[in-house]
Image 1 (spheres, rainbow, N blue to C red):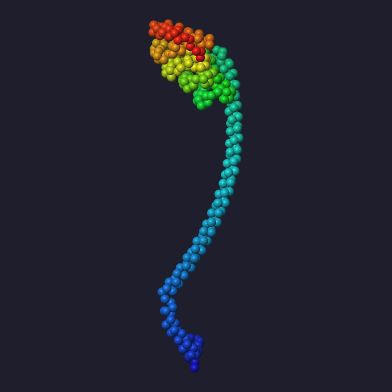
Image 2: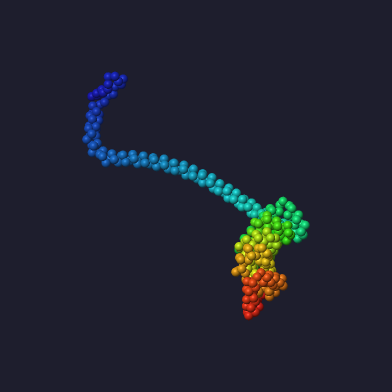
Length: 352
């Protein structure tokens, strides 16, 4: 027997056997009975967890893909950075090569300038030995600039040489040393002329201060030739009353001159003694400025010893110094007589 199942408004009719319908009804009722026992909360949680795992897996895939893209981006940036680093390394090597070439050129230029300066200043040193040439030099408008450069050059040379005291003249280039000596020689020759020492006393006081400071900074036995030239320049300036008054106001020089008399170089002692003689024995200056400052520090014993030096010029200068001191007055004569008695008892001094 067949039954017709459908709706009135449906265009088709499905025929189902009664037996099949009963079987379907039975299966549905069985499912209703067994489904709550099978599908419990734990199963639902597992299903939910499975769905979460699928979601996490999908997210992990997305993150992995994003990381893969980031890694590819970083790798491309790394490649670009490596290329840039290589380019900069090559540029650095090129710049280092250029720097080396520039240093070589600068060294060559410095040597050339030193050689040119040494030659020029040596010629100027020779020319300045004539009075007319000194007058022409002083008439030039560049004389102040020249003296300023001379002061800077001497100061730089002496300060650089303080750390190179041993065998300095052999270690330094002969051109550099000759350049500095020639500059000092030109200044000395300018001071040897009356108009020159007046100019130095009035318009080149910075140079005079530099000379006095450098003589104090230079240790005994170092650059004796340069020290002699600077002492000669100061002595020439001291011949002028203005120059003498200015030099006598320098406390560092007044304290230094007595120690220079004990220098191992006889020529340094000689010219230091000449300068000291000029400072002490000029009228109107000794009693007001220099005399009181040197009264206690004057090494009379050393002066007595210098009379027996093997350098004839130094012996004569020391004797003239002692004679000049003896003419100053009774105090000096008393001191000198005591020193003479002491020297007679102790014997002659060793030669410097």
